[in-house]
Image (cartoon, rainbow, N blue to C red; front, side, top):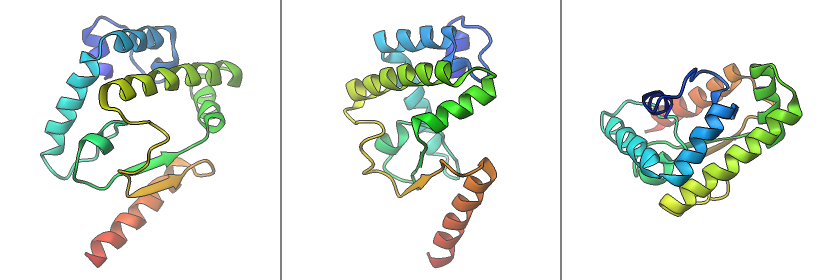
Length: 153
């Protein structure tokens, strides 16, 4: 998605970009023109055919029929706290941007594909609450689950 934003002429597509004014502008463009999301999802589906890939996508669990699908659950407050720390901003600003971004993103996916992001968990094999976990702990938990699955398969 960031590569597409760069192609569209957006600048400084780096960490924290999605919550920035530029990121919000691009999000509004996506709301108006769903072809951006369809283009990305088509490319991700092509990559998924390669096997042995890890995809970070909010749409793939519904669009891709195979694979092991994980939902990482974090409260809006925890996500905003992490964004505020990453972007060196305050919690109020981060939470407001996050809520706006989430709302518009949910609308895009509902309109395009008919699923309720953050509410419908039917395609997932695992839901992991990451509110109290550091990134290393998330990786460790996922590795243990996948290792156990492979050992019992």
